[in-house]
Image 1 (tube, rainbow, N blue to C red):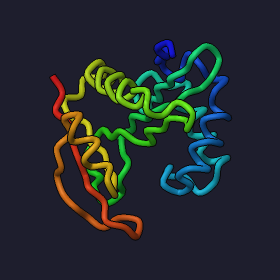
Image 2 (cartoon, rainbow, N blue to C red):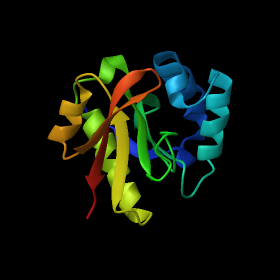
Image 3 (cartoon, rainbow, N blue to C red):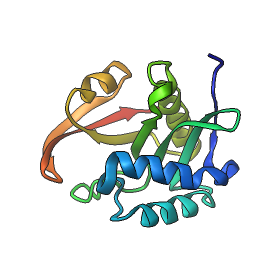
Image 4 (cartoon, rainbow, N blue to C red):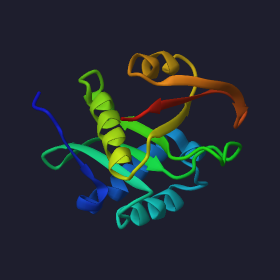
Length: 157
């Protein structure tokens, strides 16, 4: 399997509808939006943004393989924290090939380009272990959206 190209959604706005459908089906309200159409409209805005929000897309040729969002705000109970990595998503058929890791690395590079020195995320279940192996450090455990979440951060160069 050849390496995917990772680029800003600004360069691939034709993928907005695909990303909205797949991610909203997977996360629903965890996208921060009540409907798929609201999320699609957010992605359209991101596709015109030169700062935040920023969406990075992995694709092989014309085929969407995954994406990740860099947001100014993600967790409403932690408005003082910014920016956030959110909606890391890899299509089922592409999982296990390092695409998620490549998207995370591209996101942290993008954050540095924008002048940030730290990025946050929240997650749950077994995923804190995945992120910890990539250098993310847990900050706190907090109940959010009806579930215990681990807030994590990574320090950037």
